[in-house]
Image (cartoon, rainbow, N blue to C red; front, top):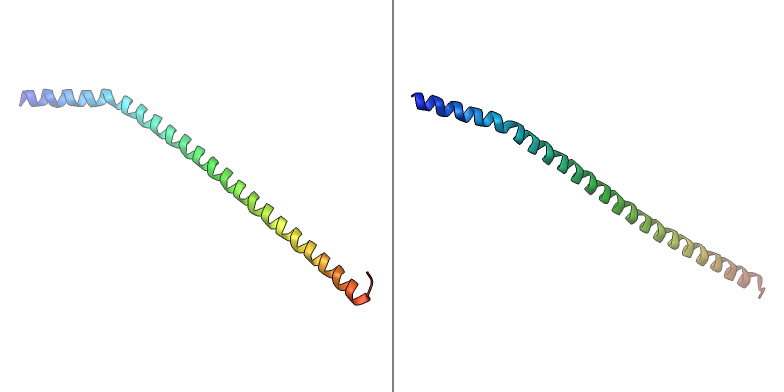
Length: 85
């Protein structure tokens, strides 16, 4: 019974002495996770921004193409109707 108490006391003392190390390791791991999450979020945001810019550029180009075709069609129709060359 006496050796069991001594063993239990030794185990408790060992756990108490390791607790700060475990806490430091947990804190370090949490900080690394936070850093990684921020980096991933930033990279995702940049990818979304680049994608939106590409889509916007495509829409702008399509809009200009429609405007040019409409302008050309208007002038061709006006020329046909009025008979001017």
